[in-house]
Image (cartoon, rainbow, N blue to C red; front, side, top):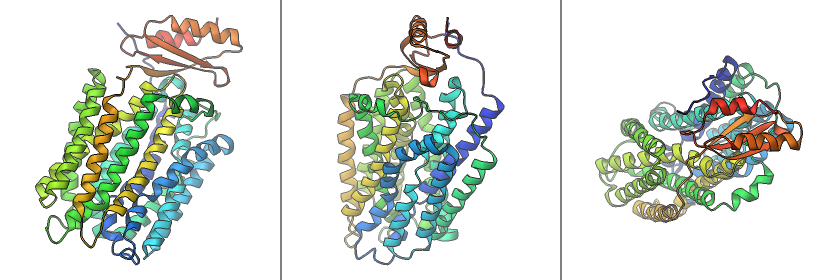
Length: 466
């Protein structure tokens, strides 16, 4: 029977992961809160009707600068320290939020959104998390952050219409700035200082691994997929708030839209859980993957054909967020499974960059397609349906993922002989498929079958050089 490493996180690690997860949550809420309320606000801004395309571009603009600056911020944190770089990014985000809040023109809001995205701290936060957790607990720490992001998305969708009714979209932008400043306080008052900041190949982009990741067929398919997923999300939300608030159909006033989003997000979250369990426990990840994309396609089809009915729009939203939440939870796991040993951090970095770039392209696509004069909602939905159909075909011919996890172990090796000796020892364990030991990091990266391998024995073996 397989044994797992039973040790748990110590108090310092729990405090670090909790605080950094809260920073990530505040950061992501700052981006998500605007999603269901932006379009109805933006079309009333000065200059928006002169060039309606700017509304979609402004919605997705943060994604472009996130994509451009995410990796440089991560590299800067290696050189200048994690906390200063994270604080700088959060300050930039706060400045962009204030600019957007104070602007009464679409150009001013666009500038604010561009500046918001320039504070791209995700990679630096992940690197700090790696600094503050032991190798054997790093996967749990990253999973905690992932869960936090998912919850912040669900909460944001539900509360954004309520906040809009109370303080308006400008008030939400100011709230984003406050969240950013609170995050800086949490960073310096709660998050411990790392004893040592070093590069972690399982969590950070490694330039030497970039070529292997970019040439990997399955990883490229996932990168294209997450780009199309976030294109679809942003393009849909250029027009969905307008569909709901459209006086011609009288579906749901903006202040009342939380009554739709709240139950939809709750039910979608509950229904996502069995799909994730089936994907992982039953090893049916590709089947669940294809089903989730099909749910997005079905939702887009309902939006395109039945957008004058609140019940059918609600059904479409439920299908969409079941699929979306399942994909958001499972795609990073799939990246980890496909990634070459020691290249998980690089693969995730490229994946996240694709995601942010997709958000930009989706906002731009929705802005260019939608004409507020003729209200051609269906055209946007049909284009999203086609994009998702292309993704489904790309995913259909992807190889089944290897059901392997990456386990990172502390490995005190002093020379190449010890590296080779430990590599062979670890490979001798049943369930260990690949091993890469990086002497500079004093770490061993192992691709393992968690249903087979004895993790406790593996951890113990890594501690013995001879």
